[in-house]
Length: 299
Image (cartoon, rainbow, N blue to C red):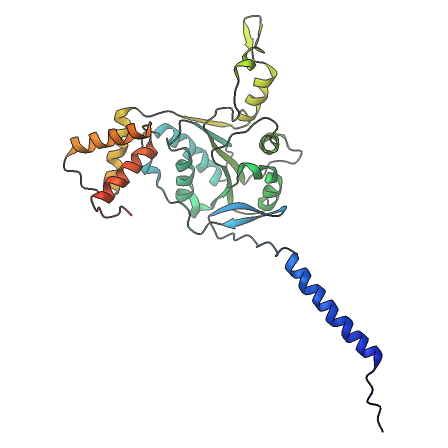
């Protein structure tokens, strides 16, 4: 009669295989999922982190704004548009620092450039301040790509000894490896030198002959902003500029305003309640007015 006893060796292997499968299943739950591959067809990305590794996350619906909708910053538009046009065409161009009053169109201007030049190969990558230490990895990822990339850092400012500060300095001008020809950095900030400035630092200023030389602390702060080849300054709007921008957005929203004096009074009251007259406040008022009037396009 045939032997029907189970083979102890085969039984041992079967038990070991079951245990191994259980261990692998538990490991799959612990190990991070593989990082997604870049979607090079997207015009805008955000740099995101998963643990210590970073990846490009495509932006499904980039903010669309037209350059023509940005009012009373004509000189700033002219300069950065020329710089970006040179860059997209493969000619030399500069990293750009946009500084000044809040709500005057700094961030909107960068986003509007994407809308104008995306069809010609321009791509925008938004990088948060805490992730600037990854700039070498981002540049390496983009190095061989045919597109032209703007690394966009919004509302940028640093405190002393932040790691992103030195990383940005190196990325702009101080790396051993050469800068990628297809990458520029555009940054916006309310601070010209990207760092707080203190009264005590003025005490370090010294006189050499007829020249005034700032102290080491001030020089260190200036050294970062000087690495941007293009500086654009934005200033607060006066009352008439603010009202002009309100009028522009009312036209964009197709908002009825048969009583200009009423619109003027309400627009000024709106600005007074917010303590500022700028393009953002003007857009917010026009949006509110258009919504209250039931205007087409107000949504």
